[in-house]
Length: 520
Image 1 (tube, one colour):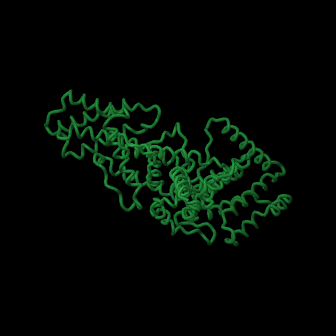
Image 2 (spheres, rainbow, N blue to C red):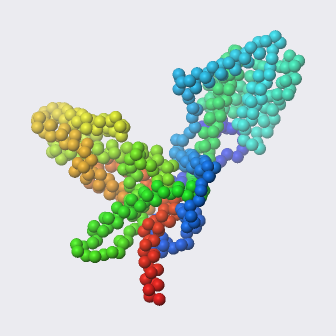
Image 3 (spheres, rainbow, N blue to C red):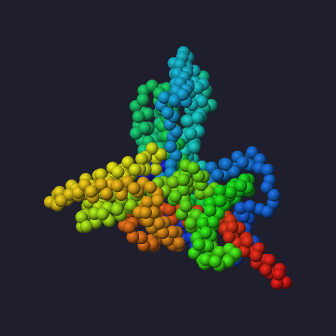
């Protein structure tokens, strides 16, 4: 099992991950999504890009709904494996004092008690033990790569031949301890290095029933190791095939559940409405009559839709169907971004009020930033009281500044300045606070610029003023966000194109058709 090069599973053909870098390149190499007006108004879209047909709605059966749910579950799992380098399976642990945990413990103990009583009987009974050896044999064989490892495969089948063991048992010649020792030795050859200590402990166990019990425990761990090894081995393949796989699976979901793009359409429609309102306010002059629909950029509309995801209320609003696979990542980015916004606001207030005093003291600025970050941890929890925490940040900020001033033999901040600073910090709690609104607009500007770049990893946009204190964190967050967006565009671009064509150009296309008819 090639976890760290010390051991290998018995087999020859292992999947190569030499192409794993292609995934990050494919996310960054998304071509400009700005489609021409003709591409959005044409009717030449393929089947995979058509989120809805002109046929009347049909009745969806229960089996179709369950099939769509299974497709979504599989698609979500493959997506998680491909994009999350830290993804791995873990054993489910029941709560220690739960009913399920107690029942499981009692049933297992009863089974092993029965086995012990059978082996201690006169003469011994081996029915349960033979079944265990048969199960162990199949588990050991499952660790071997199909088509290879024939020598060890044959050996396992010969030594753990249950028909032979049953014949030996009938003549009182079965060696249970010898079989257990062989199993432990074979496990030592097949296990990952991390399990060496567990296998070593098996050899030191004296009671044969306890040995068999612990063998199954270690085999469970080895099964999990094998599954995670296969996940790592096949991740490059999932990454290379992810776009086509997700698009195909979502098309299957759409065919089984025609309403599977309703939330996505609503999400894009909100951006269309906002952009239409903004364009109308800037282009229409007072008293002028203009009944024509303003032209909107599909890319601008879609990018603004994506920007909404970092301000989304994940507790009250459901995500668009096309973004379900990234819900956890998007929510984490939103929570981190909210914290960065507050830190930037605090820094801006501090610089405005105390800039002349703390100028040239980068160590103090870093310390004040760390204090803010620590106190703002968990600010997205419902029980978090932002106003109280901001008040505490203000008090600690004043304390650290005064401490620094005393160390340099300077006068401390007077009570009025301290009260003013604490008060301004506390006022950030209100979402319509001018400083908070300013920082939010600048962050939105940066993220919008980031989404317009063809390759965000290679060339980041300039950082707007006032965000220097969070520049490093914001660049990392922005890159992660752009990766999610660009991959999502690659997978669901055809579906978005069809929605945008209908929302932006259907009326215009109809207008052109009417004009053509009048001319004829």
